[in-house]
Length: 283
Length: 120
Image (cartoon, rainbow over all chains, first blue to last red; front, side, top):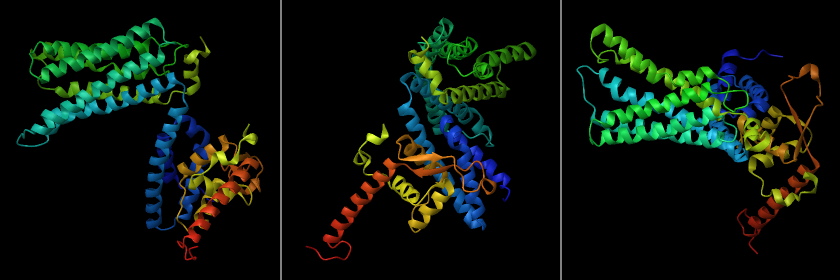
């Protein structure tokens, strides 16, 4: 038997991550074998390119279809938890994107060029969308986990949901120029949200349905503490607030986003049997 | 459970599912063989990718229309990751019902001169 082509197989294996975990576990090896068979049959670069294009299209369509079917057949609690995961992933992508568009992007241009649409419209819209996704995610997680969550987690998720809602109100008021005092409301809400996420993750125990990756939850909650610490240290050393190296804030934000993506991925792929326990099985 | 189900409750079958069942009508096959057979029998018009093929296989298994088999023609020549499937008796009845439905449709098209026949 011919040996399998290594690089294409690795790429295809990476593509398999797009499918729900249950489906991938059941059919992933067989699908990979089928791809290898197809790849061996494609001999010219043109045929291989065509195969990759067909495979990408097939993966996109089939993965969406399998996610929708997994969604429809999952118990209500699992749907909510998975929805929370997807919303956290959306928020985890949108927040750094909004920050990058709003702060880093103009610095790439020299001389400095002000981009009103990107900085005044697109970046704030993405940021508000991210906060809305976080709020929705926290509410879904709270509702989905409620039967099995411990007291700490309920309180933590409630504070997260309230915090991100307050943050939306605060940022909205700042955007409408209702006064600088809304700044503390916006930042306070954001802090409450991320500390709630951190708390919910740390309060995990063997009986609760959160994915067991405490590192993800810690990482997700790092933005505010790391930024505040970096700001305080910078102020002590230079006597100024964090006006120069906003990359520290950005770096902390990237870590947080990574954590949110990690948390979201774990929730979105949470095994259905764990969620069934929440629906009353282990009550 | 599946045996008592009426074949007509599955109709009309999606094209991919129909072609997979049709491919298994002449014996058990693994995924790649099904894919090649469907491609050949449709003149290259239907190329099932791994995701579409195994998504359909999963649903056909769940519906009891096909079965997975442990028998392998020659284990020494075969990759253990290949999985073989065969038509279940319900699947054969559903395939027959779908083929008859399509035949009736073709007959109607012929009667209305869509396929070059004479309109009655």
